[in-house]
Length: 451
Image 1 (cartoon, one colour):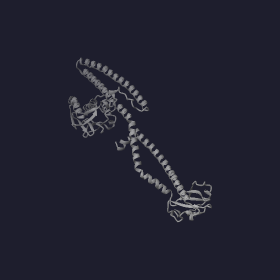
Image 2 (cartoon, rainbow, N blue to C red):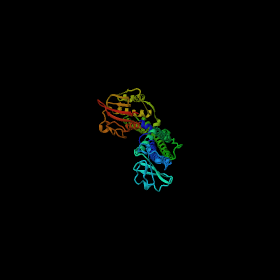
Image 3 (cartoon, rainbow, N blue to C red):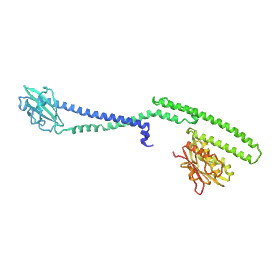
Image 4 (cartoon, one colour):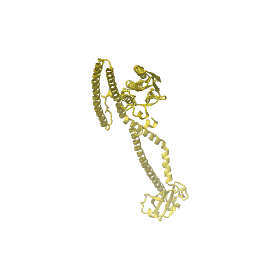
């Protein structure tokens, strides 16, 4: 699992979807807030600038003295000369002729005559400049004081201010984004905690714990109906499972009894070919019945029944149990390979699977020879090697299907043994396959997947 998956969950998971949706919502809010703050910044900037222009105009108006030279103002001062300062100052007479200062504004006379005395009017000069025009009366004479932003100032300076403000606060912005991301991940994990608990409860339900149900405590209200429906499905499956188990138990009892009676009756018959044939037929029936029972057990296996299994120990036990049958057919059994291969599984069913592979090798291998159980540890599993006739390539794909038999050479079989091996392998997450053995024979492999 990658670091991204640890933080945000697997791809297409509900956890990642929640985190992404939260971040998208926060991103949208952040973008909207940025637009609003930018708008507020420029509006606040304009208000501050207008206030400053109005104050500057009022200051100049307060210094006007009609009887004094140059209206009592210093016409040579910097603020009345060009754009060297922050603002440009110009005083107009009643005819809107500049008395002090050099600002020339087309149409200014048409824009300020109706302005109330003592109240500034804000004007736009050109594309980027703003100004405040204040009309005042001194000694019966009317003057207009115009204070405007310097021509060298433009919107770029305002943008620079905004950029400067953002740059100063960028570390807070980074902290805020990190805090939002952490909060989104934490909120998602807390929200999904009940689902993880329910998933754990569901994973603990198996053939041996069919009475367990998922708890609805502390679950979100939207999830409760789903969990309730799942519990009801478990109830129906439990009833079906119990009915099937009871039926299998009854069938096993009912079948074993007449088979035992039949065998007893055959044993009381006089020796001869007929008795021998009947005994073999009963033996095949018993073997087929046991294989069918084992196949049902393998398909009903649940991971809750798993425990650590030593593959070497299982191989030795199976080899000891089947050694007599192998010797009767003139064959030897050998256990080789790794001595410490361990897996999680069901020891009983794994022994049944390996026993079926050995029985298959003993039955179909021609002549005398050695059958080898080779244990591997990477990946963990068994290889059963024989010197039989081999399996044609056309039959290998169907060999592990139920009631499918390869070339038997006249030998009897129900075609269930290898199907049992496949069912046990699938229950353990393992794979089973067959390949040709160099020098003749077959190699049946039962291998667990690497974690």
